Image 1: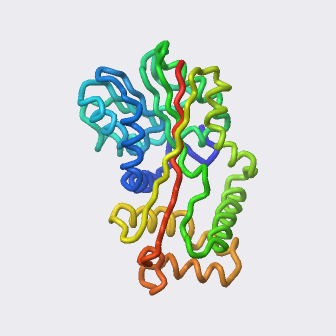
Image 2: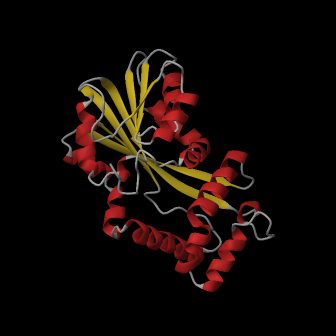
Length: 274
């Protein structure tokens, strides 16, 4: 299967996933604790990536429970197996054809995963089949609210965000409507026929001075991995040159060393019951 964002079993963006999980760990762990998963529960992380959440759930249940992870990419499965709790079951699998029995889990966790599917509602329905009656699904997505990178220059920030969207539209041949459909987490759960839908958005907020994990994520995953040279053709010359300086640790204008650096990113978790 090829996902909406080009995902295949061979694709590997494990390092970017590791960087995000280290960066957003406080907020992700808070969201996991808020679920109050009972000891002895069976939890599936669908689209587990590099597997950090498996350890967080294991810890939340005080080591008394079953955690399983599933990801499409072989490289991500290898990474998850190397870092997850020894007793965790980690398999390579497609969310639309999961290799688990119906009713096998008390909770399914899927964060920054369903947006990769051409039909997220179908994905929710399939994952919901894996829940026992009364089980819950937690669907999460970061950046439903536009991220704030340059608090001192909203105009440039807007131009950069527009350039990123234009790049992704051209690369993946998708419309703006398809990309923004991810905002409908609550709607996906409702359309899948689930009950007691609730939602909470946390802000991932970082200011100077940044921790090593924060700087690594912003520099390598965003400044270099998401922006960089790929945006040259989507920004005016002056804006691209300004952005390049802000993203260069060797430049005196480097954004992450500014004392007024202030970053915001949203993390939205919607929960529903079968």
